Length: 368
Image (cartoon, rainbow, N blue to C red; front, side):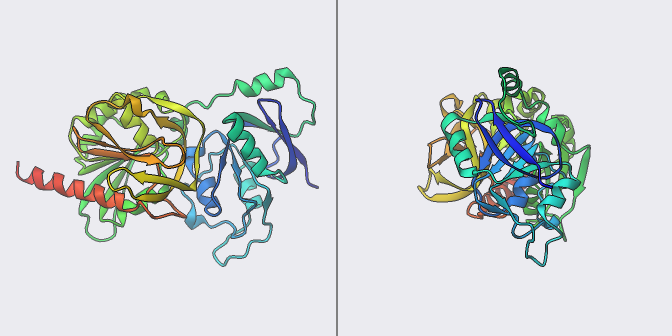
């Protein structure tokens, strides 16, 4: 028998739906929406959604089932999942099951039957807010709303970073050695590096700058990850040391924000963030528009950029900063995901730019 489940927002609005996945009486998180029409498996397994209740605006989710090869992480870190309709009988030769079974195995509650586009419009109007999935029927009192409002995502990066440091080797001869500083990296970042001839050291977030440099990398990748970038004070201090080491650095999403803070910039929380595979960004050097995949609720404030930091990409929809090149150190970062899977692939060549930076570094190092 299906259970009636309610989504209660911190402003008192609530939505009624039916539960699937894990049967939990209550779960609280930050409610965010993503506009992707495909790639739901990559969304569900993206560590950047840690502590969040994720709403899919596309009305039908799950029609191609569950495909482990498409996961961005073997764990699921989101708190709950909301859809308009989910497919109970997916049709795909690669599928190993449906979303209901998948969520039950991972103890993740989900809800369907909600008008997710109306919910997304509510978030867009009022801004990102906390919410609670509950089996308790309305009405709801001020004490419950205050509990929801007081919820905070804490220890986000520490909760998703891998333990230790692991070497992932490329197929064939390795041309480059890269340290991926892993704050909750998506698997596809590793794939993009290894297919370009990189041996990758996947290093936990607690790794120090000295430990990273002791691996003698040709380049350093700063990964995506969850939470407020300013909550990572220790990482930021270590980044300051790394920056002056003059090794090539490429930062994505949270990595973009962390390097900006380390160089003196500030970040701020956005009204409702950018989440989905259809975000247009503009290359300020060429004027070209790219479609990008994004998942972030914080932005680097352009007015705070220090000398030597040049804004290189902006979001076409709202004009926010989407990329920075540092003229005083060999580093560049982007807020979006050039490794995006299930797409788009428009900005994949940024990995090629990182490779060229490492080539230059190796040539200069050989002449010393």
